[in-house]
Image 1 (cartoon, rainbow, N blue to C red):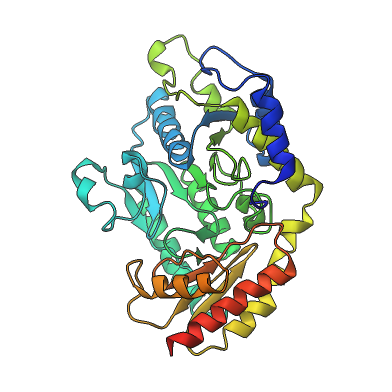
Image 2 (cartoon, rainbow, N blue to C red):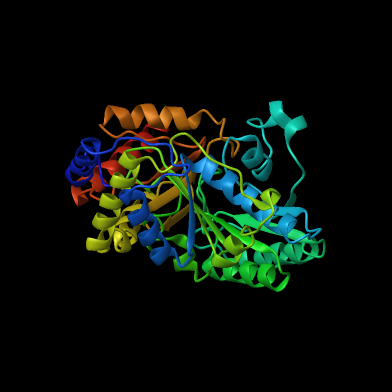
Length: 373
């Protein structure tokens, strides 16, 4: 996120390694975890936190909290709603929430049913998005007629399915309908959190407040694996009981690892001390992407925060489209490493990237696209 070997984070991890490198978090605590929990609660507006060790487990924890919270209330709400194209992780529970594809086919017998709603993603110059948004909201309203435990979504950007961007107003309409139906709202900010969309969290940019929020990728600035699931006080209170069966039984050996917490605190310092690094990144992308989009093969350009993406007119729109590997090899020859998603090419530069480095990325892309013929 901040660039490889960011000195401030490296120093924080080194200091922590000389004090306490690991402890099982069950029935224990330590200062870095307590400081991180306090700061994340203040930043997200969600009062409670459950630590885990990666993005998939952060979402899995959110799923389990939502499900068990209703069970603890003796409620019959059982339905879960997710969006088409979603990716929420690779555990069995998170695969069930995600879109079904070649990547989940082998495990289909293990995956529980989830109601699906369209994801009306858009791009620059898209004049047909409003009808698609209304259609998706109609699908959501229909699905919510069944007693629903929770609705999960990736705020603003579906990353793994091709950097598919929706408008903030659509998410506000989703949140309003979910809350009116009494269901819980789960925001998967594993990809979008910590400045990637131009605000510290995508939910803030969209103007919504979820009941649960999953965090991971940017949490430690990319230094160490860590996950965190934020929850409202209302949900937390639903587990305070004299009955052992109401307990949330979940934990991992490396939950709240002190080294990861130290890295996360240092990364938050960097983000909060210089918010302009992520708040102004979209303005740096825009003119460069506009120029690149003049290439005939470049379709549906879109840009949000630190992310810029487009599709290549080269066969099917698919993760398995080999055009991505051709672009990857061409760009590598120009000193730029990319990871296209099939025919979707995207840039997600470190926050510390210079203007010259960003220009190098776009120049390499333009040369690679021209070389395709």
